Image (cartoon, rainbow, N blue to C red):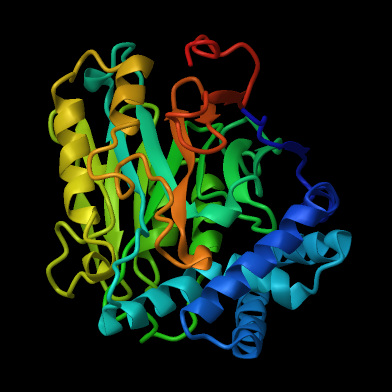
Length: 381
């Protein structure tokens, strides 16, 4: 098991970017090539993608200056062009517009894209904590090119922006999964609809993730998702240590809200509640139709008693492998399109601890990354 890189970062965005870029220089360059190859496999010309990335850069500079400043420092320190770093930070929108095209084409062999996430309220867990969890299934070549950032800014409510610990990809400033000093946590899933791309450039997914973990209050954490329309569809699972969880199916024009039932909410990669637009991920990833319901059944059987052993058993389920909850590469797919569980994530919102693996949980151990010292569950994994 390889230890995940941990970057200790401070309040200054430029210093954060310099540390990130210098420490992960090789991984950033690898991720640039991985994504350009993936876009190319989906029919997108590299030059066109980079030209589009200039537009995303200009938007981010106007939308969130701090985010853009951190990106610029990452580019400078890693010896990568700012356009390429902007491409990484807008890669969600670029990727999912390509997925939409692939869903319309319906290739002969379905792909394996997707993630499975779930939230557990205090009444569902053995220790009475609120947990957010996820198998992050993504491009196989991204494995080994991820990191954890522990950012110290403020632990005093309402003072500046909160400290947080989050998981991200080398070159991407925002953390897709993480927990902050206020006990606010985030996990995510991809969704595809015919409306993706119709609204033009809007606040990118990774900027929204960063702004969620910048929030001191739960309403402030919801705002980056719901207050503006979106370029691409996505699912946000947002929780609070005091026992609140909301799953938001956010399509370009609408949001639908799913709340836990008996302390549990689960989501894969197809729309469950939103009916105003068509769900399309199942066209290229039919496995989404069973991953969520299967995971929910496995967890509901242990409600009130869910501990790390129960989490491991559910998150390592291999039904219909390789397109399972615990994802392994389908070697019949072209290499740029092969997907695995790059990381399993468990967020203990009460203890402010991020647990993460390097690769599938069936082959790795959860590594504990506490936001603060001496979490009571730090050796429970």
